[in-house]
Image 1 (spheres, rainbow, N blue to C red):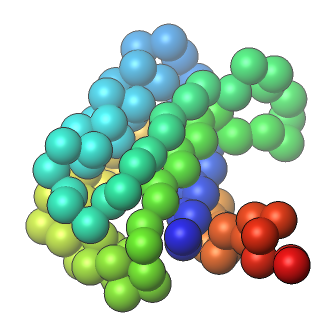
Image 2: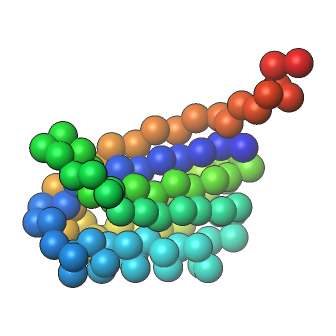
Length: 102
């Protein structure tokens, strides 16, 4: 399983902006068939160095992640939220379970 974590820091932290960006991101769940699962959440402990929103996307393969990145719906959502976002940080990793170590 490939996990793609995206941290969003908004230009202006407000309940309205956070709700809008989250709603936009959640639209991806129903429209991208290579997306196995996803989670979206709001940071509960804001500091000067924290992000506002996290999105976690799970894919079977790196090829599926690349299809997601190039998908027209993903690109449309990126354009919708771009005016609200000051910074994005990402991490992509292969999920390892205890069974992988045996």
